[in-house]
Image 1 (cartoon, rainbow, N blue to C red):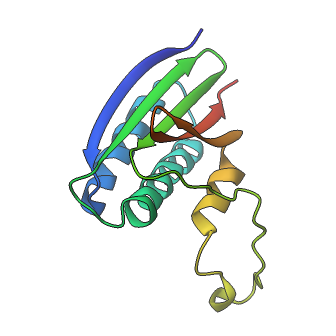
Image 2 (cartoon, one colour):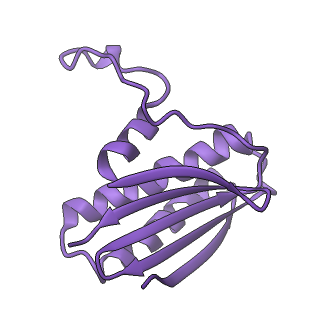
Length: 140
């Protein structure tokens, strides 16, 4: 059974991302005893919030992002909710680059690619006039 263990609201301000991502990492550390995985979860939170601030809210600092963490004995679930107009995220976009040439890394899409690679499930739903990005990480 899922249980909500943290709900956090932040203004859509880039400087606030570290507060939110650090909070998620600390809460996650009660259930995951792997520093590398905790760092990857934090990275996913940073990328998700950054996408909302830049692309959904277009840097409107008066907008709010809701971060919810849910616990189940086999996974942690992270919901990032925004009230922007409806949008679509392409989690299946393939990144094409030369791994020997850092300049060949694509300008866009890297954050979504990382989220998809790190998390076990990722999806975006429109619920009650809000966009909810859900990221699930198995802990067993």
